[in-house]
Image (cartoon, rainbow, N blue to C red):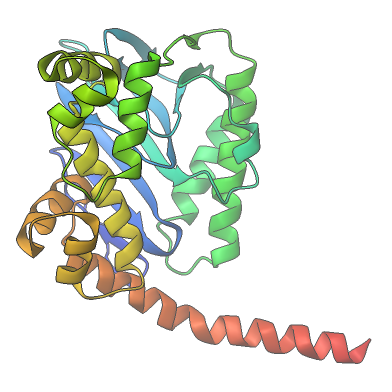
Length: 303
């Protein structure tokens, strides 16, 4: 594994063999580089974040439920937020890829994202340039916040433009109404203890049938989906609240150790380390923000 430096903006997270992960705390962006064979990433969802994957060498398999496809060197893949998917390399074919998981809600390019849950993006010079730029700027702690945000916006925009013009992709993955109700119920009650019996009553089905069809549709069982929602909400809260036990209780984990185990598994760093990095970012960026406000005020008085 290549050695990457850790500081107040980025954290190295050795989540998978052959992978390196930078987490850019102030933007809530994961920057992943991977090379290897076999299972590359377990089935996971990215709540509120799009995953942009650029295959550099070999072939990358992507599985969503019962559907799968292979992206080859030079191709890109855009996975929409909240889509459970698994990454793997075909037997005997090593794979090298780079991916960025970025929030879409605050991005100027979010409105341009395609409706398809997953789209294949054909090779292009603009996509390759945007990927290279993002991977050069995002882990660079000397880069300005504006430069890093601009690199994400451009990458989302270029991927979205290419994906909309691409005819290949998953087009009919909308879940049945009863499973959509179960998913939405878990989102609304992520911090509560939701049993299969409750979901079965909501969907008017037996609990075992709900568990089986939910996994077939979304790729993960209801409990795993709810756990990932809790971890994602904990990430947001830890940026403003350093009390890990309190965050664990609010998002629905049994205790601090329960949160820590799941947080380490999905994010790659401990909640304490993650919260510490986020607070250091706010402190380090405060003088720059104050200077910007002062200059803006002086500019207004001058005119």
